[in-house]
Image (cartoon, rainbow, N blue to C red; front, side):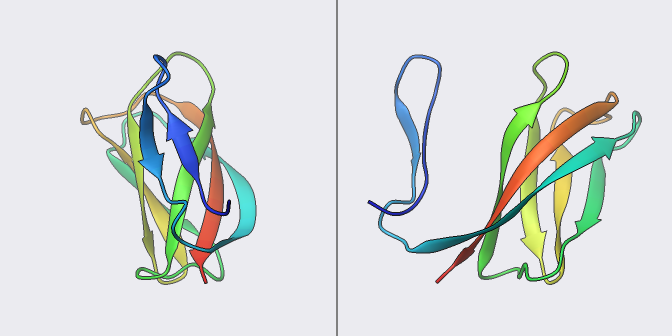
Length: 96
């Protein structure tokens, strides 16, 4: 099986990209400062239509961040509004 699967705390499958072939591009650690609602992170090889970024680790307490890729990087969004300082580990993938 190729792809990416994620389960929530109760064991329910919430993301299943198993039908797609993907290539692992790399991992990056982002130190997001307090007081932002979004942050662009340059990363060569990512595209808006052919890549995705998966948050795999967040230091500190649980917070809600999301990602979106653009040509040449990805954007982190702090969903509730204005962020606290966080260190976020992100895995990056391209669809084949």
